[in-house]
Amino acid sequence: MDISLPERSAAIRRQAARLCRALGWAPLHEVTLPNGRRADILALRRDGDFACIEVKSGAVDFLADSKWPEYRDFSDALYFAVDADFPQALLPPDVGLIVTAAQEAIVLREAPLHRMAGARRRALMHRFATLAACRLENMVDPVDRFALSCE
Image 1 (cartoon, rainbow, N blue to C red):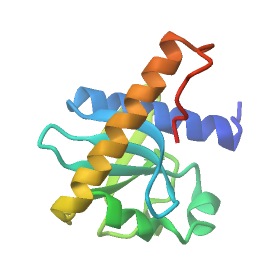
Image 2: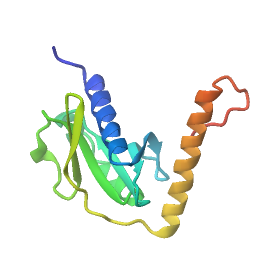
Image 3: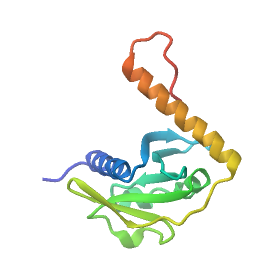
């Protein structure tokens, strides 16, 4: 049975986030970056670095996306997360690679580090913490008329 592209993307995202947690990283989904781009997953790693994980559901999804290099400015390491059927030869070699299959995911290639400047890291850390806290609070009290906007 074939699954739709949105279902495939959701499965890849879910497995990549589980891998993040297994690695001790704190994943946050759908994070709008200061440049207006939306990271599929922005993960805070144990060492305080940020990993941006761009989920690709297939070759067409990757080939239609020319904006992924803009994520580098707001992460210390950039990864693509794909499923086992993805044609990996399409992906650039200077980006990390996470491959998912069934209920598992592995880092097939580590992303090279390209550290952010301190001021940018502090601003992104503030954005990350505020967004995570806001989402958690909105889960605890979803009908609060004073609820904060999460973006």
